[in-house]
Length: 429
Image (cartoon, rainbow, N blue to C red; front, side):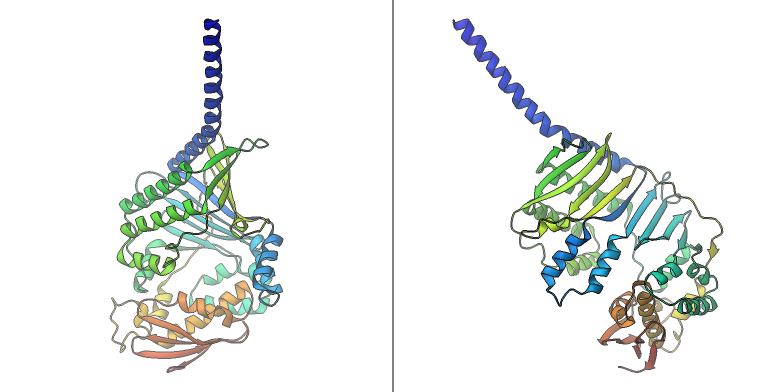
């Protein structure tokens, strides 16, 4: 009898341990696959990913209307969201051999269904193509306006009209570096050591979140893993990562981080689950997706950001690209250096304010052509884009900006429509 009881107890104990181990293995197995996929992705020398919206644009529009009220969210805003949902952005790279000399990179965008906008960097040459006419037509810009822009731009910068016509142009990366240096916005590129530190911090953050998360496999789709963490865990890790970045970054970069984030991470959010969907096949990431509407209390819709990952990237130089000389741009932006107190090493910020004001106005018009709407809508962004070292651009009222460069001041007023020209006058606005 004792022997029977002992055997029974041993059997029950063994069964309990087996069930317990099976449960642990069931929870551990998807985490191990996720870790393996992350290691494979980190070790890949050639890869790429495409960012695109997921879920339902109607769910996003419904939320936006609810949050903004009937007057705060217009049909135009809804149209912009629909265009966004019909767009995607692709980044790819190929590290090549040792060093960066043979590295390749690719940026590709589909904008409201219009394909062809692309940048490739190969052998230190940047190749650029933009379907300007197709985009202009998509956003309602008259063809004759595009013709005029192509004519004027081609006269000022030989070859740039090829870009407007949808062809490939090429620019030597050494000239781009020189351009940014003269513009006073060049920054010392991150050293390999700093890049490695940032990558290590990213890996640490991912591992910390994974260690504290629940990972389960979708029974209906074996490639699909569902990762559940929480807002408090994500907040704590985001704060740790930012603090780590501040230690790695330069003083200027830390200042930008502080300006961008400020005190946003000081207060932890209310604790609630966060779900991330992953797709992994044979130890390689295929995609991941996060529903942005899960962060809205009580919302049951789905509007997500999805990232599809490619296991390799074939990046080659296009044929027939027209080489662009940046010298005319240097001359245009650097006009008026003499007599302003700016020397050749002070950057383009020493140029006449009227030159910069004209560029600000043109930039707003080009943005309106590409995205739709009035130039005044894009003046603030144009002002920020053109605020190089030594140049101050301030929007003083709708459609009007004041530009200060060195000792000169000018005022620019953008036209009411994209068919007009910016009006620039000497002196403050």
